[in-house]
Amino acid sequence: MSTVLTPRPFWALAVVHARFQFLETVRIPIAVIGNLLFPSLALLFFVIPQRAVADDPGIATAAVAQLGVFAVMSTCLFSFGVGVSEDRAMPFDPFLRTLPAGAGPRLMGRVLNGVLWSYLALVPLVLLGAFLTAATVTPTQALAAIAMVPAVAVPFLLLGLAIGYRLSSKAAIAVVQATLFPLAFAGGLFMPPESFPAWLDAISKLLPSRAARDLAVQAVTGYSAYTFALLVLLAWTALFAVMAVTAYRRDEGRRFH
Amino acid sequence: MTAVVELAGVTRTFGAVTALDDVSLTVGEGQLVGLLGPNGAGKTTLLSLVSGLRRADSGTVRLFGGDPRDASSRIALGTTPQETGLPPTLTVGEVVDLVAKHYPAPMARGEVLARFGLEDLLARQTGGLSGGQKRRLAVALALVGRPRLVLLDEPTTGLDVEARHILWQALRDYHADGATVLLTSHYLEEIEALAQRVVVIGGGRVLADDSLASVLGLVALRRVVLSLPPGADVDLARLPGAYSAQQGLDGRWTVLASDADRLVRALVVDDVPFHDLELRGASLEEAFLTLTSEKEAVR
Image (cartoon, rainbow over all chains, first blue to last red; front, side, top):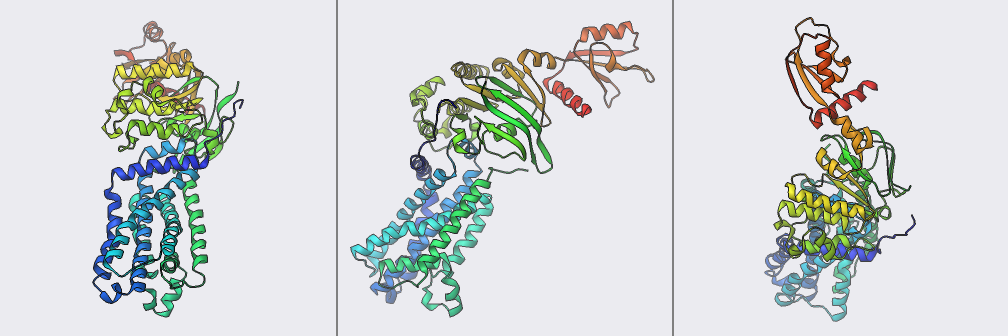
């Protein structure tokens, strides 16, 4: 070609996609409100009435942290995993795929959005925790918690995207539900893993939800995570990233044939 | 001449359906090509291969010399979303911006909206647009990045005459600026209004690829319907002026004629014992079917 035309830079395109995905979401906010409410309600009904838990600064903070991990996980898997499969069924999606942007910027746009909505999902939970329980963090721990959110959000976003690009929206909802709740229970997001039998604890330590939970709890309390938690989380992140990119590349939009 | 689009021996199947069967097609810089064919002929599949949405099962597809599945090959490509597919909560201005930001030197928002008479709708959510406005916006999105190749799939289906003419003019203007345009339609009128070169597709194959005038001649068939008494031994298809002949379930013969006048004269001169003769223009669909079945017989 005589004129050299190069695609727009990766990050510029990622921000463009993130911005428009955010606008679309914020104009139909009901979709995200469910994710904002459930973890807060769980805290309100199951943690706050148990004063033995709620009045102990360490345990209460850990409880808020593990429900926070759940809030991030469900935001990422539902809104962005299932959301992708719903978008894919819209005729605008194939059009976007013909624009000069590869899989990367669009996926990154979703990741940025997922992280942002994860922060928003934590706001009510953190407020309830701060005002109605003894949960407390030092400024350093608060910063650590803020830094933890993307580390927790990204693997589950990628898992959601892998599901969303592979399956139809009805199948994706079922698969996300079948993934989210077992992962949450076995990862100790509802019941602390200290109460697990030894075999479950062993399995639990291999799960991304448990690794994320322990790292989040470590960030905001003194309780240290198990030895390989970070490695487990990174390994799952890498695997989910490969799955998401593969699913996106294989996808040709809706199939009617 | 630089090839903008190049398909060589392309086959694409969907399960048991062969959408494209060994198709080769080259579109050069600055051409305005119409892909004409009945529904299900493979036109949309062809466009989806060129725009990188789908992959060919065999054969090669080249867009500006590169693989259309690479984003960098699509830098000078503009396509339209289906009219029903605009994100309903975004405004017209936002959708235009979203698309424009993918290109290195897009049109200003005002310019692209003015080309399609959409200036007043800038802040309107696309969900609130009329069908015609959505269609104009869809075509505007194809042009906003100043692409050198525009792909348009049935650009004016469902539009009223006036809206259709506005869109056609906008496309002619854009082509006059030097762009290559590849559009599909099953309306002969649309192809006549826009295309210089016409590619007729049917049953997944290229049936004809010629100038507009030649293809128009090819499809300008007449339909002569008549009855013959039982036992009459006439090969209607071999009569002068006839193109093909077929007996319907009711026993009546339908002869597609490239020259109906000659055919009728021959029927009279040869003293063919016909009765109940009817004569009318063949539909585009029938012309396609003839082309299709003929190629079928040749294979």
